[in-house]
Image (cartoon, rainbow, N blue to C red):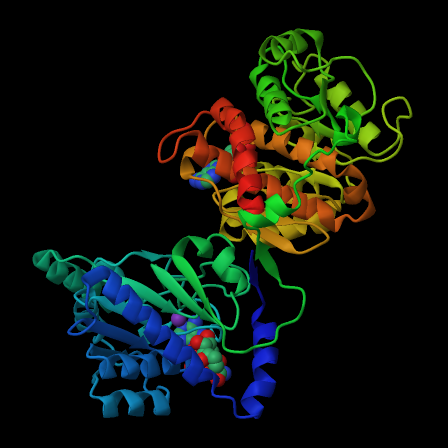
Amino acid sequence: MIRAWSVADVRAAEEPLLAAGVPLMDRAAFALALQVLADLRARRRSARGAHVVVLAGAGNNGGDALHAGAHLVHRGVAVTAVLAADRVHEGGLAALRSAGGRVVDAAAAGRAPAAAVEAARADVVLDGLVGIGARGPLRGSAAALVTALGAAGLPTAGTDAEEGTPATHAEEAQGASAAVAREGTARPWVVAVDTPSGIGVDDGTLPGPVLHADRTVTFGAAKPGLLLPPAAHVVGEVTVVDIGLTLPGTPAVQRLAPADVAARWPVPGPQDHKYTRGVVGVVAGTATYPGAAVLTTTAAVRTGAGMVRYRGSDVVARAVLAARPEVVTAPGRVQSWVVGPGVPPAADGADDGQAARARAGLAAARGELAGLSRGPVPAVVDAGGLGLVEETCPPWFVLTPHAGELRTVLRRHGEDVHRAEIEAAPLRWARRAHDLTGATILLKGAVTVVVGTGIVHAQADAPAWLGTAGAGDVLAGILGTMLAARAADVVADPAVAGEVAASAALVHGLAAEHANPGGPVAALDVAEAVPGTVARLLDLWSS
Ligand SMILES: NC(=O)C1=CN([C@@H]2O[C@H](COP(=O)(O)OP(=O)(O)OC[C@H]3O[C@@H](n4cnc5c(N)ncnc54)[C@H](OP(=O)(O)O)[C@@H]3O)[C@@H](O)[C@H]2O)[C@@H](O)CC1
Ligand SMILES: Nc1ncnc2c1ncn2[C@@H]1O[C@H](COP(=O)(O)OP(=O)(O)O)[C@@H](O)[C@H]1O
Ligand SMILES: [K+]
């Protein structure tokens, strides 16, 4: 599991140590230098003779980078510090100078392109422009430098949110681009110091230009922005360095690892039978779109449900039974409901009466239909089901929208937001939807964000090949089975719903990878890969 703490928590943990004179920066810089040496050795056999460019901003983040640069000089690395501020960390600069490092001033207007061209030819670029002290989009010389580095061929992300960025920056950038294109050299390995400079450290946003890292060496603990989208896409491999901080018990964001999911998997024992293992009720698909029902029920069966009851229309039930003869269509007890995959919005008349059945399933999950349930049980609400839920939901209802569907949910509650705004700040909008609806929100994407009453989760387990029609129906089935197996826990402690939802996203993502490593997958292939994925998880846990 990777756990990430907020800037405020990290600062609070640093405070007493700094007051006691603990040399946190020395610890951070030394570990950073060791990691860069290891990366250099991995990339070019020897670190000796390599060229590292340190981008140094005004704060302690630049101090870390400069001190690390000094250590690298002592190991035979040629280090150039590019200063992006009039004043930088004095101790760090002095250490680098006395070690024999070169210093280039890029703070003045017009200096960024030449510095960027030099950086683009280095073996490693250390990004120490700004860390947890970042406020808003990167600005001034730091922004100019990142923009010029982008033009010089290094990957960058985010928009230049600064209104009226001087035209000279663009012209300078073009100059840098041409210079590097002539060289045709491989681009440097980019190591971000603590965070890629200029990300929203607590919320994972990309408010302005950011240099895309291949590795982020982060100090004391991971920060939320390293796990949350869209910033999570520019951090590369995250290496957490222990500098001796004592952090609060509860992190701000966490990412489950396979072992975490395996440890809590409900492996059946000798006393178990199909009803103790969990019955999943499904209302999905229509005569026009029966596929969603097949995918959802298949995934639920393949994840190890005790039983799957299909409670939709007869015509869809025939398609479901043809694909999965294990499915039962008779009414009876259910420990979790999956409502909505492939069901059109309520306003659409061509739903074969599925909307009414979906509402019945939701009422049963609330514990309101004595014939269908013996009390409240968890529910997965997907696609068309999102328009059928009541305005407020219990937290054991897990809503599983993608960004476009979340927009519809938010608009129903009076939030006039566009899909692009949700994609730019997924945590913010998933949290808003949770606050407005009361439900646990699983916001799908390349990084899936789960916000409920407990810790926020951000799972990044899936290959991009998973972005294919029907993949969401499969996730709904997997999650339905996982909720049914822990139904009593989920209702008793709603925070468990978020953890189970994140676990389902992990299983879904790994199943997509296992279905065809490195290549395309179809939704049904993903569902079929789930049993093998679960077996691998359990094997990993027991070994
Ligand atoms: N405390 C310690 O001993 C330890 C700290 N550690 C390290 O220190 C880092 C935190 O250091 P920090 O607090 O100095 O903040 P930092 O990230 O360098 O940024 C502040 C500077 O950036 C500037 N700036 C702000 N926003 C900006 C923007 N958008 N665009 C451009 N510039 C911007 C801001 O300028 P100002 O706004 O004040 O004008 C100010 O000069 C942390 O990430 C870790 O690496 C570790 O070594 C462990 C021990
Ligand atoms: N680029 C991507 N990388 C990894 N996973 C992705 C990517 N794009 C989409 N996904 C995943 O694929 C699934 C798509 O679900 P959804 O959009 O509901 O599709 P459908 O409605 O067709 O079933 C989600 O689980 C989502 O997290
Ligand atoms: K940084």
